[in-house]
Image 1: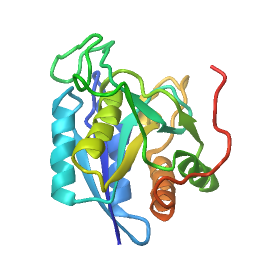
Image 2: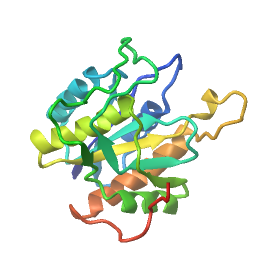
Image 3: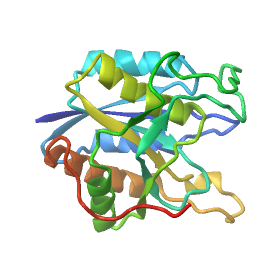
Image 4: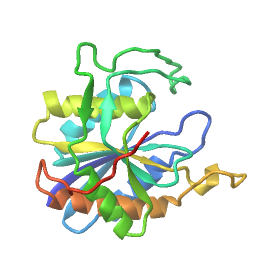
Length: 216
């Protein structure tokens, strides 16, 4: 059995729900065959979120870690390719912190690439009927903070773990005027289950050799 840790975030910026945690909870309740899944909600707080992620990894001893976060406005589930070593918050986090141009990890490398097979994960979600794409930016808020933080934890403390970050769209209940794209958390969860199965099946350091690049 492959052990999986999946995380989502607490609601932030005045929202009452966070679809990342909704989807993570659904996946843990009905995990893919052959996987044991533990779900943990992370605080939407700089610093404390990485501490909570470290504690969760220690407690669950996973083989795979997939962290989910909300990307309102995106039309599908997006697998992040890279996290960068900068916090530049347009809005405060849930503790009122608003770092500007500060490193996630002082002295750390400029970036960490996901150790998930990002293209195989995207292909698996599309095959499951869920809109998906590779993303080359996780932003500069707490989602990127965790994208980079997870990469640093893997590089420095948990070298046996593979992991990465996945953004999910708003849930329909968050889009009251119908003008922005949204996906039901159950649909997101279906995609994430396919992603986890693909990641578990793919040998480390391998991925599909298909284009998922962008011109800008």
